[in-house]
Length: 213
Image (tube, rainbow, N blue to C red; front, side, top):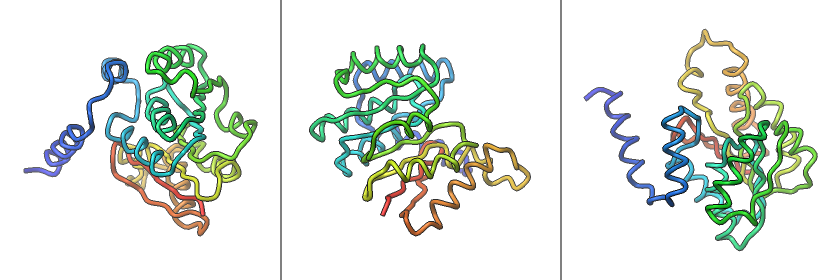
């Protein structure tokens, strides 16, 4: 069996291990598949939920939230942790409104705070600290976002960054695009800075999990 076949089997196996999601979340997954809209997917979303539960997160900030799929996982964790708030931040008003509909139907209307604007600037303007920050902005912006994240994330808090395998482009030495270099630089900084304890988990498109000392 080829490595590619094994990879497909592994992804399918991991997918089956995720508990069944509510119909609203299944509809969000179906929309993403039909329209090729990038979401973290069920296995990575479930991991984000688990980490937020382990961390006891009550205040979560998402940099780049799409139409609220990852937000739903974090909101579930915050609700089960006793309540709090999750910031959903996107540039696009239509996406924000779509997310509001999904998340209210899921029962998270009292937890999610909606912001429309540039994500890093919105984080800069929002009072911290946060227990968990999720980063899924344009990849060339990853390195510059780290200073703001470190300022707003409490000691003992968790940073999760999506797309850190970047579709394999990080392995192509000839790829010096701003996005690929942004992923590489953010990875280098988080894995060499003693203020962070960092692991890259090869699920979905690679999630970096970083604990702030």
